[in-house]
Image (tube, rainbow, N blue to C red; front, side, top):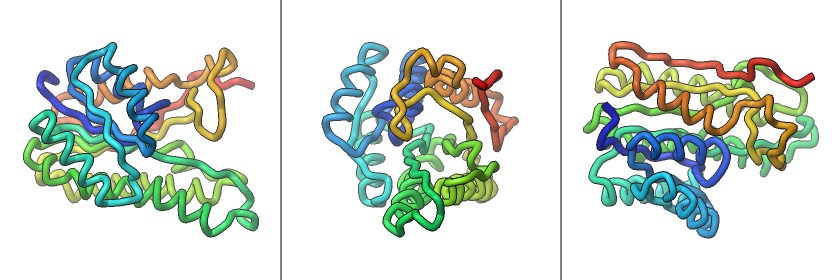
Amino acid sequence: MLENKVAYITGGTKGIGFGIAKILLENGISVAFSGRKKEDVEKAEQELKQYSQNVLGVISDVKLLANEEEAVKQAVEKFGRLDFVIANAGLGIFKPVDELSAEEWNDMIETNLTGVFYTLKASVDELKKSEGYYITISSLAGTNFFENGTGYNASKFGVVGFTQAAMVDLRKYNIKSTVIMPGSVATNFNGNIPSEKDEWKIQPDDMGNLVLDILKMNPRVLPSKIEFRATKPAK
C-alpha cells in the first residue's frame, strides 16, 4: 500500500520531524525533509540513511514560499512524485503578552501558521496528481490556552482551523487532511535536552508510528483531528 510512495516533511532535522522521517523510511516510504540550516540538514540526512538510502535533505525556511516551492521541486525531481506532506516545522516563545515583542509574535505566526499554508500552497498540485495526504502538526496548545502562551496558542489554534478548512476544500480532489495535536513530546523544543526525565512523554518515534497508522488507514475513513497525549503525565 505504501510501496513507492514519497513524503515531504518540514522541520525534519530533529525531534518530531526526524522521528516521523525515520519511521516512514523504515516502512519503505521515500522521504524528503527540510531544515533551515545546511549543517543540520546534512547531519540529519546522514543519520537517516541508516534506515534507508531513499532520503533527501533540502534547505528551506517555511516562512518563505519560494523556499517551499523549491523544496517540493527538488523532492519531485529526486523521487518522481509526492504523496504525503507533513507540515511539522514550528517554534515556541513563551512570555506574558505585555512582554512579547512584535518580532517574536511575527516569527511564531509566520513559522507555525503561515508556514503550513506555504507548505500546502507549494505542494497542492502534486497532491492533486497523487490524490495524496496533507498532515499538519499542531499541539494541544491548539485547543487549550495557558499563561505565557498568547503567540504560541494563537498560531496553533490557527493551524487547527486552517487544516480542517483545507480538508473541506481539498477532499473533492481525493486529498485527505489531518491535524495532529500532540501534548508533551521528548524533543529539544524550547531549549529542552531529552533525557531519562522525559521517558513519560510522547517520543518522536511514537509520532512517526501515529503518522504511519494514519497513512495505512482505509481511504474511506478520515481522522480529521487527533489529540495525542501521554498516558500518564509526570506530576
